[in-house]
Amino acid sequence: MSRLSLTLICVLGLAVAACDRSAPDEAQESGASATPSGQIDRSMAGELLPATNVRNLEGRELNLGALQGEPVLLNLWATWCAPCVKEMPMLDELATDYAGRLRVVTVSQDMGDTDRVAEFFAQGNYENLPTWIESEAELGFALGGGVLPTTVLYDARGQEIWRVTGDYDWSSEEARAAIDEALESGPA
Image 1 (cartoon, rainbow, N blue to C red):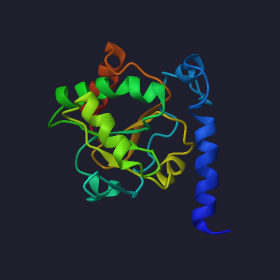
Image 2 (cartoon, one colour):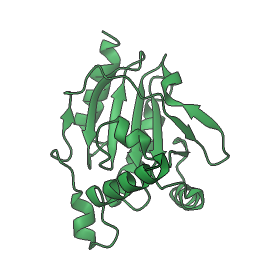
Image 3 (cartoon, helix red, strand yellow):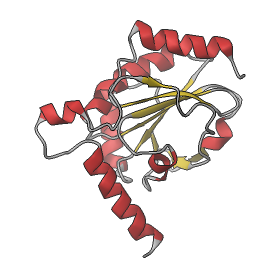
Image 4 (cartoon, rainbow, N blue to C red):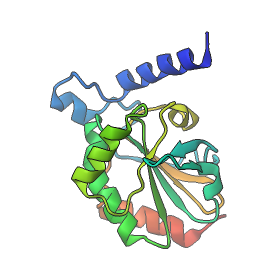
């Protein structure tokens, strides 16, 4: 079986495990997370930021592993995932509020549908979020699951501090406190 075929099979599995496009909105909102939604999970602390290539709408590539040197909040999302869409304005606000102290990187899992991602960003008027796309779904697998949304906070050395799988209120005091605590403590 070719790598592309295997990737396509895995992506289909991820789509089924995450958000179901044909399900009613109620099912979309609940997500299909294997772990409780909206919980900070520190069980993967110390894992390295995957050295996966992503590209922006203009075709420029970025190796995520090269982001060491500054803390990174990495968010995997898709335009068809309701909890992901709900989080985007909050992540844009975080990017504004933490500018210069934290890099917020959003990576679409829309299977290379750059037009759809571009339209989504234009409609949302997200001024502080990058438009990165990773269409092979390797990043979701590297992060250990593929449930969307998945957001991981990495320290300046590229080591995971904590993650949230599923829907989360990034505007909450809890979210800000967890980010502030991580930024203040710095790399261990």
